[in-house]
Length: 247
Ligand SMILES: [Cu+2]
Picture 1 (cartoon, helix red, strand yellow):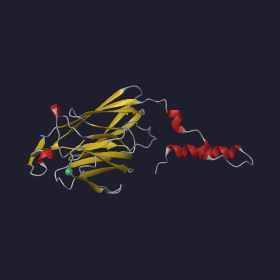
Picture 2: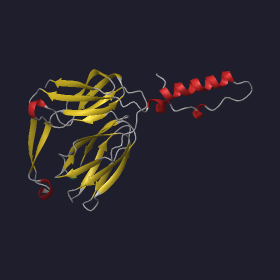
Picture 3: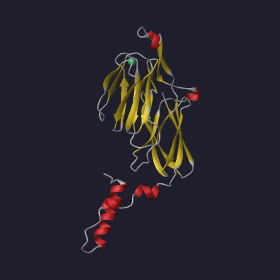
Picture 4: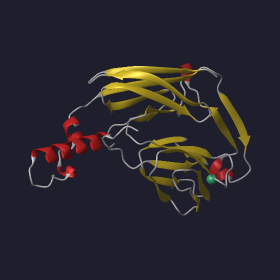
């Protein structure tokens, strides 16, 4: 198992303190300089990722006879959400195997909305922390997650309950469903670092402030699983990675 950077640094400090003093007890290792502070000015580079799905778009139309005023009378269920030029929407792109100490993201608290009886966004990526789950429909929904590392949630959200705030502390991909509307399906992807993005209809997304070096980029999409590529990142430069996933 690889030792975390901070732990190695702290151990070195403790050893130095012990060997340089006579009778005085070693200084506590935690009093040393923060190794991440020395790295802080590093702005890093950017990774532009494009994900293309080369198979046919798969869209199923489902007729609805429940809550039609809020939900509509049919739903277009996109198993593969493909835009122009094969761009795949809703793919999560992230550094894989990240071992360093990440800087925090400064995004506002993420939100998952239930609107027209669909989850928006369908695939949401976030760092561990709180998520606001909105009910814009004004009807009864039910948040039902399938998770292993985080506590499962099975909670009704009545029409008057506009926001439920939940915490997700462990990295995991979590499927979300609504027991009231069987077609509703979304994903919450919890990542242990800030180096990720979710693709739009062009299939593209950007990952900013990536520390320089060689990295592995992983793309994940619900119906396609994971694919990986290597990428080299340099300070102040943009690296481009294109995934072409066959159907
Ligand atoms: Cu619902």
